[in-house]
Image (tube, rainbow, N blue to C red):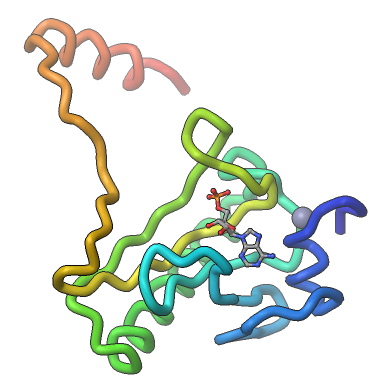
Length: 137
Ligand code: AMP
Ligand code: ZN
């Protein structure tokens, strides 16, 4: 647990939250500034700043939990769609530097936009980018 980390404190139950699920390793809470009704955050109880620090076995666990919660939330809330979002780094929109995964139920006419402006790279650029990533290990 990291001393000055608010999500460590919430995950440990030291700061109250609207918890929708808890087990030994995770707490799932409602986001205080929801994009839509039911917007929740999966918080590991251990501190990892971001996806790079998250251990491989935790990565699998987190996504399994996301799937379980998505099913429960769809049934409970009757949402029409579902976004799973996970931000890393300030430029990517991360504001709390304790790994978390957003579970965002979506509703017809909820007025939210989660997305990006599509680029228009050439085939050469796409091929070069693919090569650079492929050759990294
Ligand atoms: P991110 O921008 O991906 O780092 O997401 C941080 C999220 O945490 C935002 O959606 C905030 O609304 C939410 N948040 C920040 N503090 C709290 C808190 N104390 N309880 C619940 N959600 C919070
Ligand atoms: Zn933390």
